[in-house]
Amino acid sequence: MQNQNIVSTGGVYKGRTGMWLYLFHRITGVALFGYLLLHIISTALILAGPEIYEGAEAIYKNFYFRLGEVGLMAAVLAHAINGLRIITVDLWSKGSDYQKSLNIVALLIFIGIFVPTTYQMITSYFDICIEKSSAGTTIVDCMVRPLPDWKSK
Amino acid sequence: MKNTTRTDWGRRQPPVSSSNFELYAWFFMRVSGLFLVLLAAGHMFIMHVFNDTLNLDYEFVAARWDTPYWRTFDWLLLALSILHGTNGLRIVMHDNISNKLYRQIALYGLYFISSAFFVLGTYVLIAFVREV
Amino acid sequence: MDIKLNILRYNPETDRKGHWEEYLLNADPDERILDLLHKVKWFDDGSLAFRRSCAHGVCGSDAMLVNGENMLACQVLVKEVSNPIKIEPIRGLPVIKDLVVNMDSFFDSYKKVMPYLVNEEEPGERERLQSPEDRDRFEDTTKCILCAACTTSCPVFWTADTYVGPAAIVNAHRFVFDSRDNASKQRLEILKDVNGAFRCRTAFNCTTACPRGIQVTKAIEDVKRETLTIN
Image (cartoon, rainbow over all chains, first blue to last red; front, top):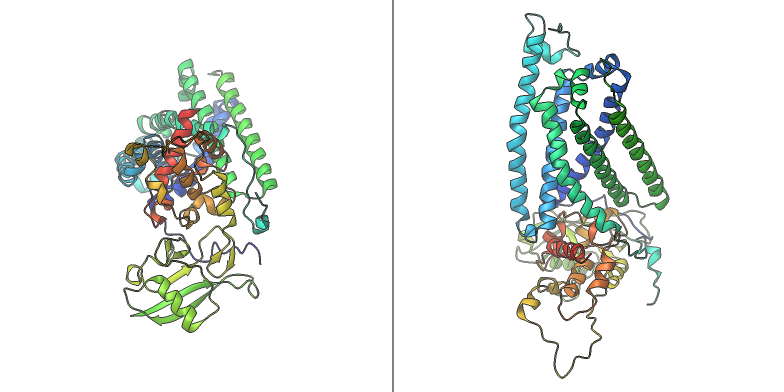
C-alpha cells in the first residue's frame, strides 16, 4: 500500500509556458550535448588527413543534412535565447515580475534571428548546388540527390 | 525531534551538506551560458551563414587553424560547452534518476565521456599540423 | 447544470493502482468543487476520502489537482472549470487513500528551513520594531497556508524526490528577509544544498498554482540572489 505512484494516470499537468520552456530547455540541452560529441569526433578526423576528413564531410553535403543543420541552428538559437531569458529571470530582481513579457520577447528575438538565417541557409544551399553541378540540374535534383555529384569547378 | 515512520513512505530527506558547490555550479551555468551565446552562436553563424558548410573542406579548417586566435576561440568553445553540457546533464541525472546506485553509475559514465572528449578535442586543436 | 465528475480513486486495502470513477450529479454553477465532493461523499459513495477543514480557503487542507491544475477545491466554483471535471490527488507525494496524500515529507522539508523567528537578543522594554519598508520585503510570503499546491505542481519535485520544494523555500524567505531575524545565514546555508533553492528551474508552475497569489518563483529567486550575494 505504501508509496502509491499515480503520477502518470491523469495526463499532463497544465503548466503554463514556463513549464514547457523548462522541458524544452532540457531536451535541446541534452540533444546539443549529444551533437557536440559527434561534432568533436567528426572534426577530430582532420588529423587523419584531407582525404578521410573530406570523405566524412561529404556525408553531410546533401539536402537532408541541410534541414538537419537548420534544426541544429534552431536548437542552438532557442537554447541560447531561452538561456538569456533564464539568466534575466534569475539575476534581475524584477525578472520574475515580467516573466510573461520576457517569454514573448524571447520568442520574438528567436523568430527575428531564425527566419532570415534559415532563408540564407536554404537559398545558399541551392545556389551552390546549381552553380557547381552539371548544366540542367534543377532544384528538385538538389533536394532528392543523396550525395552531390557536381564537378569541382 | 521525534523520528517519524516517514521513511517508509518513499520521499527521502537526506542530510544537508554545507558546500557551496551547487551555488557555484548554478552561477557557472549562467556565466558560461553568456559566453557560449557569443561563442556558439558566433561559431554557428560563421559556419552556416557567412560561409556555407557545403564549401567546408580541409583547406578551410587548416586556414582557420593557421592563426592561434581561432585555435583559442575553438578551444574556449570546446571547454565551455563541454563543462556547461556536463553540468547540465549532471543536473538532469540528479533530477530524474532517483536510484542512488544507478545515478552514480550514470554520473561516472558522464564524467568519463566528457573528460575523454575534452582531451580528444584539446589534442586535435594542439596537434593539428597542416599536411598540404 | 449536469456535471460529470471523474475522480481518481485508490483504496489501499483492495487496489494496487489508482482507477478513475465517474459520478453524474446536478449542481449549481455557483457551487464550489468541494460541494461536489460533499455531494458524492454524503449522498452517493461514502467511501470517498478527501481532506477539508475550514472550507474557505484558509486552512489549506483541500489542495487537489482539478482538470490538470493544482487548486483548492473550496476556492474554485463549478462554472470556473470545464465540464467534465477531473479530480486527482496532488502529485509527487504518496497517496494514502483517494485524494488524501501523505504530507509528512512536505512538513519535514518545511521544518528543515527553520520557519520560526530566531533572535536570542533581549527584546527590551517593547516589541522589536520594524519599518514598513522592512516589513514589505516579506509581506508576500507571510500569506502561505502550507496547502502544498505549489510544491506538488513543481516538475522538479515530481521526479527529484529529495527536493525541498517551493513551499519550504517560501517559508524560509518569510524569515530570511525579516529584519528582526538573526538566522538568515543558517537558512541560506540549508537552502544552498543540492536539494535546496538551486534545484528550482523557474518553471513558474508554483506561482500559477498558489491559491493565495504568492509570487512563489519570485521568492525563490530572491533567496537565490541573496545566497549569491552573501557568498
